[in-house]
Length: 216
Ligand SMILES: [Fe+2]
Image (cartoon, rainbow, N blue to C red; front, side, top):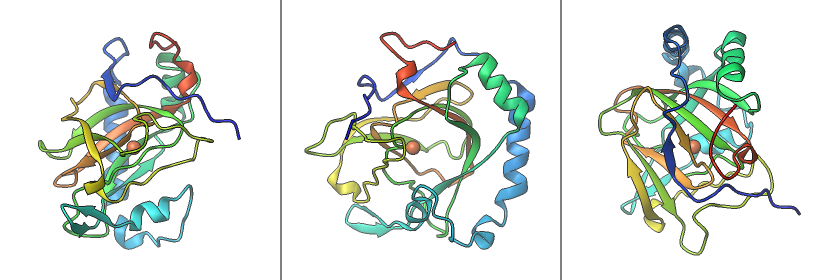
């Protein structure tokens, strides 16, 4: 089986040359989240299993030797005019783009849980951090490379036992700034659901980045 060539080793980078998202798309994204999220946990039947979403939502994490429930992300389309804005202003070659927020089936859940996103990179634009404490963490799994190697786009790693991981990097992501997130590195958000953490993301193949990182 051919492996997909992974990107260079980094955890996250700000991308100051990319244009900020126009305010009307941000307002639309927040409205879409407000319209959909209120009864999400009650309405969701846990019946869908697209690319492992079911297992991601029902996994159990181990943190400091305690079993804890996770938060997970839900995503919504932002419309055709948003897709066109991405093509015109960021990159014409991408997999998907959506507005996303966190939800949980457990009242006290705060951690997303360490994972990779599969063989794709992510541009991440934080609208609302959820809480000032929310931390994005990157980890190494002992015995494995920092940047993981995958067979296909949907090869996702869930590292449920956080006690087994070595912390590599940790940051409070700045809001309203494009961030290039190396989602080939195991990562997760901790203390995220104290408030509503909402962002817009674009995923794309790593091969559009060669020696220097630029878009368009
Ligand atoms: Fe992720």
